[in-house]
Amino acid sequence: MKTQSYGVRLDPELKNAGTAILESVGLNFADGVKLFLKQMVNRGEFPLELKTPNSETIDAINELESGTSEKSYSNLEDFKDSFNDEDYRE
Image 1 (cartoon, rainbow, N blue to C red):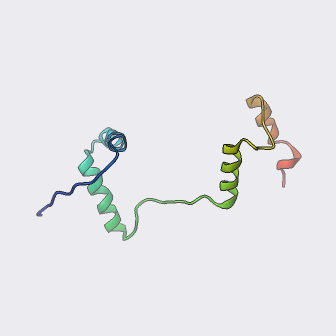
Image 2 (image 1 turned 45 degrees about the horizontal axis):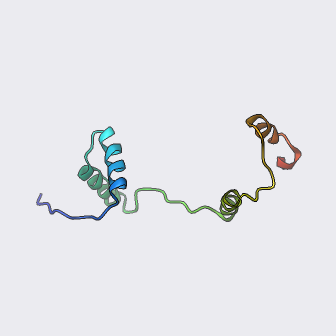
Image 3 (image 1 turned 135 degrees about the vertical axis):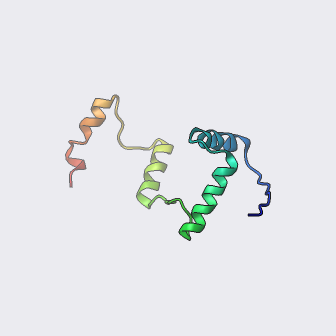
C-alpha cells in the first residue's frame, strides 16, 4: 500500500507525553496515530467516548474553584462521616 507523510503541529509536551504512553505498550507515535485512524474507520465513528459534564457537575466544579462551598472538613474521617448525615439520604 502506498503511503503519504503528513505534518501535524502539536505542543511538544503533549507529543512527548503521548509518545511515552504509546512506547509503554510497544507502539511508536506514527503507529499510534494510524491505530487511532483505523479504529475510527472500522467503527464508523469517533473511537473515544467524549462526555460533557451535566449542569450539576458544572455547578459543583464552579463551587469548588470559587471556594464558596457550604461544607468543609478538617480531616478525612469527618468527610467520611458526612455520608451518614441525614442531608445525604434520599
